[in-house]
Image 1 (cartoon, rainbow, N blue to C red):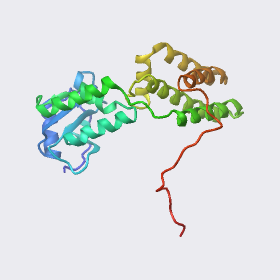
Image 2: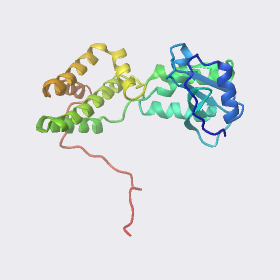
Image 3: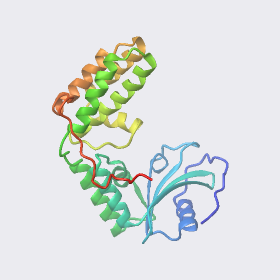
Length: 253
């Protein structure tokens, strides 16, 4: 493996052959690479990294790393076809379509091939089918119900802001999951996902959060949260039960 070298930022778009040469020198010759992100579609700048999924014939375990080469910061995910397939399916079970979305949109370097096409077909099937339905909504219902109660009763502004952000994130995620939509990542990706799927709902949630930060009013955000709770069965306080696995046991020393 090559040592980490910090280079000066590059101002020109990355050359695909440079990417392949860098990957081959660091990991050995790949089957192919999925190249995605801003640089892949001509929107990158000097501060953008090179996002690449390196697909080798076989890896002991998949991993992700960042390194600098040729004036670019690389964000590399290293897989073989089976590990990449597994992680896409694992994310789908958790309601996330981040990796599937990256594979679907990616350019194939140096050229398309059967394994790349098969993985793209899997990614598109995941994106089309969305997340599997939850067996029960009780756990998120209980958590959001408790958050609402705490937010209503809190007299500390700093604590209200923290709880409000937690509640805001939770209701956006639940809104997507209830409607069978995959989440394409945390943070800004959550915002983009909800705005794309239902812009009016996102505007209501965003306005409610902004009002809390502006004047301390919690009622608008709680109203949006209750709207989402009603979609998944309403508030849940008394009567909640969560079983832990039997293996959750550790003898005392």
